[in-house]
Length: 160
Image (cartoon, rainbow, N blue to C red):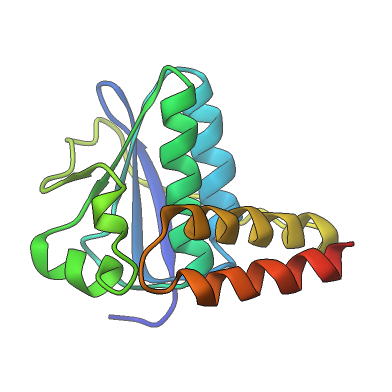
């Protein structure tokens, strides 16, 4: 698999299918967050397909938790497609598979998949995004919670 990330989106009968292929990093997470939050606020179901994803950094993992919580506070639904092997690979070290809503198969896309454009954030806004995603990882607990706590503390200092 290519090291680059490919983030695409298509319509489904109940909302949207977002595919993240390659390496999911902090560069793509604002785009995923912005798109999915808008769809969830409109009551749509957002399904993120990670079946072709090789890696998720901590910001991407935290972004998934942010979206999970946004779905709980809106009328939309948020689910992640990942098989057992990929589940262990992507979520095993932080136990997020115990927090997130997972499914085995993606819904059928009813449209062409199109590339989701990159969201460019100002430095401080990007810092707040990093802070929010890592705060959610701390709240989720798990074996890496202390490492995420130190990231949160450092970001809070930098952001004032």
